[in-house]
Amino acid sequence: MTTDVMERPSTAERLRLWVTRETTGGALLLAAAMVALIWANTPWADAYHALSEFRVGPEAWHLDLPLAAWASDGLLALFFFLVGVELKHDLVVGSLRNLKEAAVPVLAAVGGMAMPAIVFSLVIFLTGDSSAAHGWAIPTATDIAFALAVLAVFGRGLPRALRMFLMTLAVVDDLLAIIVIAVFYTSDLNIPMLLGTAAAAVAFWFVVRTRRWPRWVLVLLALAAWWFMHSSGVHATIAGVILGFCVPARPVHGEEEARTHTINNALQPYSAGLVLPIFAFFAAGVTFITDEGIGDILLQPVVLAIVAGLFIGKIAGVLLTTTLVTKLTPLRLPDAIGLRDLLPIGLVCGMGFTVSLLIADLSFADGTHTAGAKIGVLLGTAVSAIAGAIALSRDARMARRADMNLDGVPDVYTEPITGEERRGLSWHPEVIGFMDGEDIPDPDMDYMAALDGVDLDVETEFKESLDEERESRYGPSSED
Image: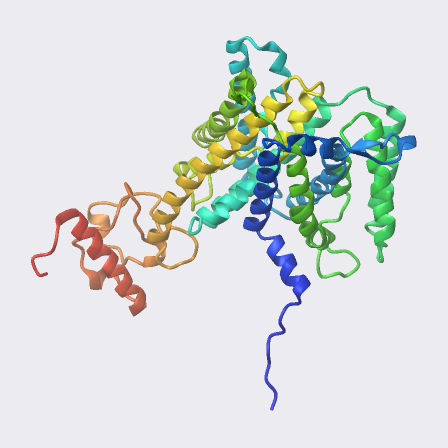
């Protein structure tokens, strides 16, 4: 006699699954940032800054860099490589493949980047601190790891379409941020080095498509592309994005999985568990508490400008753009979500962090406003996270009450039905539910007619829901 027993995953596999959870990645990122921020504001702050500035690397190759620079220029290239891989997948076979379906979140991402830049620039103009104007792009980014972590923790029960909307918006946001870095934060281009990057990328494109695709060759080509890009004047992380686009998004040579999927599964644990936390540790350590108390850094206009850009500009840009697009064009949101559902999404999009901290370093290379800019990013991200969590929790509770068939979609009418139309319908719980302010079935309708042909368990649940709604409106029944 044989018994089929599911094989227990290995310790390494369980660790990989744990690290790649959205909640785990966000928690590790937050923990690393908090450790750095606390350390940088203790009597041992000098030790933290000494560690950040400790130089390592071959000087002959111009790679004698501080550890903080290795984290932002070197390790972060792996994160951007996976961003490129994800973009390639979405453009070829994913959410960005159908332009009509992706148009609304894509345009929302554009508005969600433009409005924070406008708000930032307006605050800087009103405060008269023109020296900080170069940081206009800092509040334009969205941290996809943080945003998805907050949605996963506080948004349980919300429509799956809402997560896809956020994913598409965040991926496009990353692409736009990459373009901004490449165009506006590039110094003294070295054309021969750019050509070297292109040559290494072409070789990478060829090798990653071969049947055997030797990993060690890909690693060497990736390092070469990174070094050429680093020496060209363009930020080295852009090399990661270019190489990510080289990975085939469809199965090749009869393989079952696309290599975008294979590579993402292999490298995502290192990105989420090591790269992003290490970057956060070196980027978030800002000293703002002095012997006299809280320093003047919190009163700098750049802090207010970034907080306003992230918290106000992001949500205004996402909601305003989506409203205009859906009202003035034939484009529409997915059936499961409406404009009101995008309020918490706009809030969590205000969590800038990773890319915002990177742009803060690039914007103020002389260090004049770097500390203030980073404090603004941390405060803006924290405020947006708290507000987003509250809004998501409220909406999630409402959605769970409305999702009677547990299919992940609140069972709410998109168009109200009134009068005689109600009496002639055979109501089915698959498409019926209530949320605050939404049209509901007639509480006095005949249950048997309403539930003709419906499974008994679902019928009972639906009847109880109608009873609760009737009681909330008219009070206890005289039969009770």
